[in-house]
Image (cartoon, helix red, strand yellow):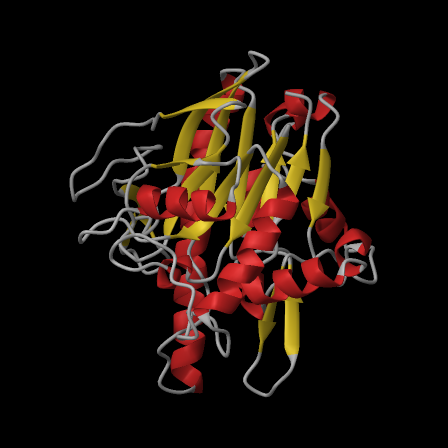
Length: 342
């Protein structure tokens, strides 16, 4: 079975109010790329992936007359994909949803959120992801209340072979200081955003430990907007959010594993793996590992194989010019896949 996570930059901008893909020369949400160009790239990328299920990060908007599920299923029909069914959980506060696009002949999938619902005052522990987590006072004595603008998508999945597992799709808080007025304000926003991202990872980790203690086979995938040494503000925290979610310093039976994260965190590589490529204002590109597929200990015995579909770092992608160009047009992130015996 092949599972994938793919952050599609501003997927919502590619659909009209009728939920149909717009293939024209109008601007997409990607700088300098038209809607037709991005759709062309996505069609080739999704076809090449040939996954049984894709966790789509930044999926089309849900609400205000728009349906993420309808848009994704129309996209799949347009390109003849076998991942032709879509499912979302709790809608986000943005125009970026977390959705699963999957092959119904390979998987049966149910949205099954855990945890208690909360009011605006929140709960401690690990409440439902569309609620509010009370995390205790910060260094200033102010009580921290944590929310997900994009609540993680919790799924119960059964494969055609009869294997049942839990799947959680994630898109944690970005740390980029958007809207900063000056350098000092940028530092303040960056630290504040990292604090929010870290808190979301703590909340997610609590849910993960519930599953691991119950013996549930578990896969956690998505865009964490984080990784080892992503920015200098990490020094203000005991570890990165990714390390928290992995349970990096905990008992082995309560740890998740991701091969790419393990390579990056080992810090012994001259070139760490990367899953995203961003253009900076001065014209240079920067690469980062932001997208992960983490698995529970039992699933490590099922012959897992990870692949980042990077147009320059992956030999198979680089040697097919059409695929290489498509990946660059489709998004500023690249797909990550896990092939596993399920």
